[in-house]
Image (cartoon, rainbow, N blue to C red; front, side, top):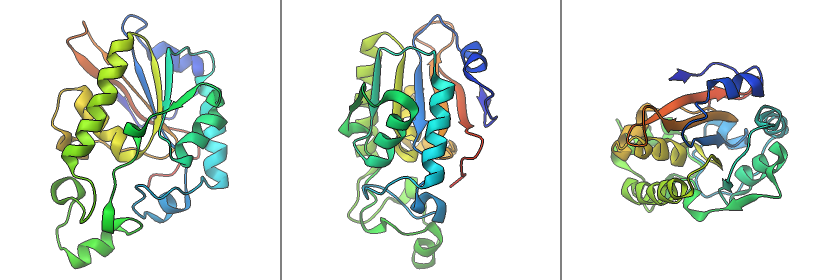
Length: 216
């Protein structure tokens, strides 16, 4: 599995893919004001920054020439706009199961602020008051995976940091809590697939950023 290296174009991306088994391309949306300030952004429907829009357009250039049997997007505008600017506006289907984790009372807050009140707090271990449980996020991710696997072809997904991390963990058959070990930047591309057969799911590529994406 390759992690974190910047891509140089669609041809290089295609060269990394197996072409034998179906693959799932995961795109985290472009930068927003809250991703830049490191505020928890769950169901708040905020737009991309100008930089986020440029990154989304750059994503589109690197996805050109790839074919998908389905393109899915979170209904939230930061994901839908990323899909649109990447060139998939006319085919991206909103899927409510791709909504970001509902952070409840911690929406818009920074980790440091929460930990000042709750020393040692961690999202995946401790959750959010009045928010969604990890189990509920995991159930949503598994529904997406089941639908994707039933299609039998390459699928492109535009969504958010934590739902995509949980989706990747569940793709591998790991507990949803193990998603905490996976890191995603804004405007990044990851690819899920298989190794020797359909009983061996793997991460083929992880967190490949655009040239100017942010790490929050």
